[in-house]
Length: 199
Image (cartoon, rainbow, N blue to C red):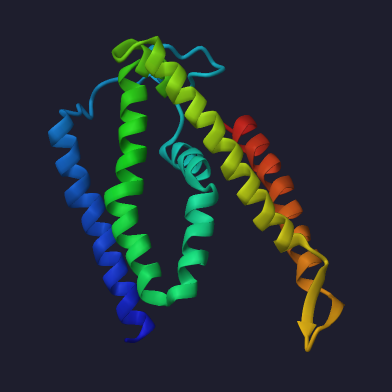
């Protein structure tokens, strides 16, 4: 199967998920597209600020781009391209997108509060404590796994073992990746200042 066909199938599935499944979820949950969000209702200029759709999309993308979306396809690639494609399309449409949609909608419906606060309101303090404990432990696991992947990416040396003999060679890619990452960090700060002062 050619790359163009795969890309067209992927675009069709993701587009269908957005336009059809997304609309189905909106109808199921009774979402009012004209309702004001907490950013407009509260608008304190600090935590609640009305923003352009592109800025909100950037925040959402940055929030979900953790270990799962980055490491998952890499690990799946070890088993071939079919699991990768299924992971991205089926997992993205029916699991990842729905999870983010539900979490964001629940927060918007509750004045922008966190999931922990929402659980306390509807389930109780015990449920909130259990959820926050699980989240804390899971976050440690994710950060540790993600830090390991990042450390391997930035590693300046490559170790190989051939016939019991270990050799260490310079890894030029490590420095290049680190330099690129630093550029993106500086560029992000610069873009943020630009957007803030050019309204």
